[in-house]
Length: 187
Ligand SMILES: CC(C)(COP(=O)(O)OP(=O)(O)OC[C@H]1O[C@@H](n2cnc3c(N)ncnc32)[C@H](O)[C@@H]1OP(=O)(O)O)[C@@H](O)C(=O)NCCC(=O)NCCS
Image (cartoon, rainbow, N blue to C red; front, side, top):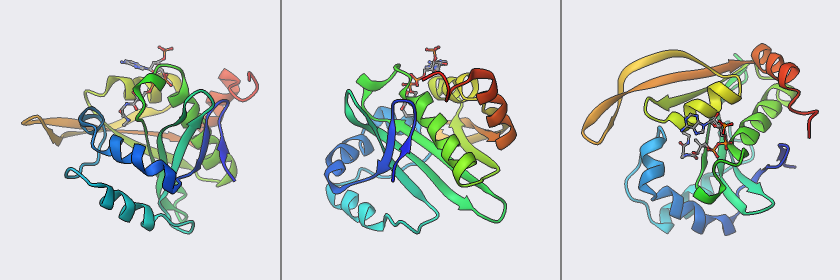
């Protein structure tokens, strides 16, 4: 199976995707914007990471595929908590040419539809570094997420500490959004 947005397809990551994922994993601009961090990583690390992907894992990772470009980035649904019915989500468009075309919004909408309408989750969370204006814009202005709190000086980047916004959405807020913007009916 795959998870469909209006345009994007979220599908399983395949071995053929690894060269592009490896390139994006070592992209300094992307690394400055995302929450996680790692040392410079080789193709060997990428392959080892690939071997850890598992259908039964509570940490699911998807390739974002679009018709015009093919693989453009990755999205995840991780720390899936079946008891409390929540999960953490993150995404990256590694291909800069694919940005500004609505693919991020479509990816987040597709993740939300899957999480809320198929998995029956109750809320999703993400975390965003204070200077990541495009990510804050996509989630809060376009996709109905809210800044629910801010952890002061959580990240250390470029010799400075930066705040971490806790950003989330509940299933009620998702249904309010799609009832208002008619996202799935205006295709
Ligand atoms: C964040 C990211 C996913 C956004 O992708 P994108 O292709 O720009 O997003 P989309 O085209 O789907 O959405 C565009 C909307 O996002 C918002 N947006 C984008 N850039 C923005 C900015 N600099 N300031 C405010 N809002 C912004 C706007 O609402 C915009 O809609 P508009 O053009 O109608 O105003 C992409 O820039 C990226 O992958 N960056 C590097 C990794 C990253 O930051 N990942 C997220 C970690 S939390």
